[in-house]
Image (cartoon, rainbow, N blue to C red; front, side):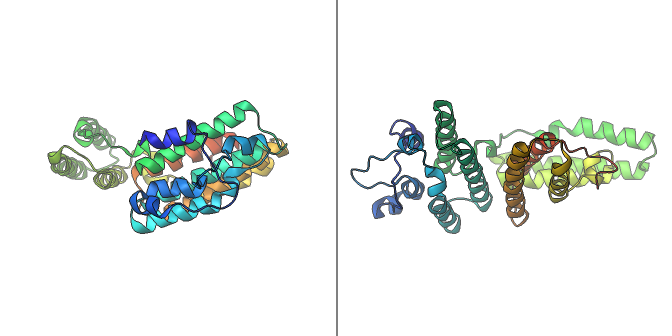
Length: 294
C-alpha cells in the first residue's frame, strides 16, 4: 500500500499535461493503480510533474478531476470501493480542488501551499490504495457490554424521575441485555465488521429513543436542516465577503456529500465524518442553534 505514497511523494506525483489513460495491464491487474494512472498519466518518458505544474501557476488537480471521478465511479460499480467510500473520496477530492483554486488565485503557489496540497493528496491516494478510510477500522471490543451498567443507571434515574414507568424500565434493561448477546455473537470470530457495528449502533439509538434522556434521541436536527440553517446564517454572520465566499464553497461541498449519503446505507464512521464537517462549518459560520434559529 505504501508504494502509492511513494508514487506521489518520491516520484513527484507525475501527472500528464493532458488526458491520459492507464495501461491495459495496470487496469487488469490493479484497479487502484488504474485510478492513479488516470490522474497521473503513465506514458513512458512523461516528466511533467504535479509540482512543476503548480510552479507554473496551473491547477492540475482541477484539470484531472473528471478523470479521477470517472475512475472512482468505475471502481464503485465493480465493487472494489463501497458506494459510501467512493462518495466520500470524491467529496474530499472536490474539497482539495477548491483549496488548490484558492491557493492558485494569484497564479502562484508558495512552498507551504504546495506541500499541504501534496500531503493531502498523498493521504487521499492512500485511501484509494487501502480501499477504505483509516477511521473505518473497527476494533473488536465489547462496547455494548461495557456500556450496560451506565445504561441501566440511566434507566433507574428515568424511573425515579417518573419519566418512564417501572415496567418500561424493566423492558429496556431486558432489551439491552439481549443486545449484549447479539454483540457477543458478532464477536465470536474476533471481528466486528462495519455492517455489524452499524447494526449495533442503530439498535442502541433505538433504545436511547425509547429511554428519551438524550437530546439527539428525540429532537436532533437532521443534517439537511443544519445545512439550511448555515445557509441562512451566512449573509448575516458578520464575516468578510472573502470568508463568506469560502464558507459558501464548503457549504455546497458538504451539501453534495449529505445528498450522496442520504441515498446510501452509510456506516457510523461516515456519519461521524459528516457530523465533524457540519459542526466545524457551523462554528465558522457563527450559527447559533436555538429556539429562534428555524
